[in-house]
Length: 581
Image 1 (cartoon, rainbow, N blue to C red):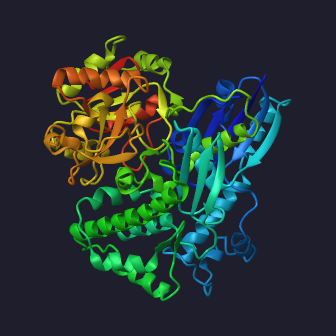
Image 2 (image 1 turned 90 degrees about the vertical axis):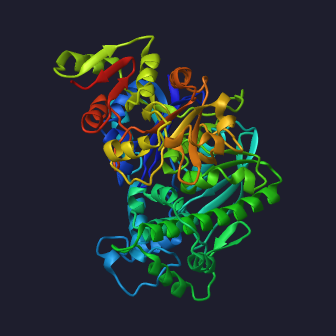
Image 3 (image 1 turned 45 degrees about the vertical axis):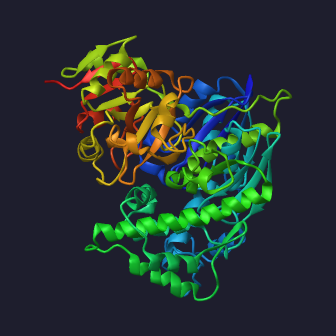
């Protein structure tokens, strides 16, 4: 009988569940959106009632004790409690007028809606898990833990890093008290350095959501990615940059809103908002300027952290750590020489952060040395699902190719085929890292438009990632440093841009994934086989989904995308599936 630590990210968006063993090993970690096939799983519990029995049976057999750890404090901030008691955090309450405007680029009703949703999710935390545990394991002891939100962000960043000692910056939309927190990490412990507190402090996460809105995108759907892709097509709008500079300034560890004329300046932002007739180049200028301003602010914060701590190893978490465009600049623009960003730096990662915090409250006497956390901790598509497909299939061509699946797939990729590639355990976090990927030949620039148009059904300005063998990465990228989770955007060397034109963005950059044999042997072998055929150690890699949907979860999900898009080949485990005709 064992003790299990189950972490729940109960944020109203990007909820997730993680299971850590008695020995501190990650047994399972996955976002709720995958099982539900509901992008971001807004207002959905991480402990889905019909999923929990399966997870407990597979990963928590015969439990003696389960520690349920959540990523928000149950004791809520004063302002939230006040507006709740005034009825503002209700549907009619969102319509109330005459309420003092909060110091934020977002409107009151947007902020209060987030608070209301968040509060509801916190109140329901663990309800389904306890119900099922009582039914299947009535003698199992259950203990509850709740942690500061930003601390759970810091935990996944630090405990999953290869560092013995580092500092951590959590830059987010909001937490219990503010939008940022900074920690020192040593001896497997997190020590707070500074936490932004008070409504007067600015939020870089909310700021970037506003930029997303100005560009005509929807931050509720998580479309901040689009801003980064569009930014590369734009140029500086000095008027907008100066306006942003009057709204947010850096003061040490804090971002603050200057008091003078704040609301007047915030109102001016809407003059840059997308209109139906706004030319794409003007929107690109807004995206470029917004991204540049964000990068300049975070650079100031990180340089202050570096000077304050005299530490050159950084871990970065929070929603803003998904800004791969800036992440690739950190080692050049700051004093940090090594940067680690976890595979799930946003709120889905907080599930593992909470589980690890609970585990480390009573760790074993023998501490394990730090190691890079694998992102492959999610669900598996088992062979019996494919065998069932073979039994009832009447049209698809299905080949079983044990031992040669990578070489045959590499040959098809070199011939220009578009491949859906499903192997092993799903990735934890938002990026496909070679287990739930759509893959293609990176050499032809037209491949980018082809996939956007016929597979992803998304905007043509959105780039694709190069997955590259680590041994060759320095030949292709300037200032190369490892990017195991596709977390950094680097400049592609001028001499190599035409060789991998489909993954070279308009500004000459690529959001790369470093691939090592020890991290993902089969994906490494596939790229290696492609390299032998083409002399290019790179594959175009994008997530196995269509726009607006999460990564595929089941075989049925994969088949639905395969049969309704321009994909040529579907590979699941050792099976190669092609369309009839």
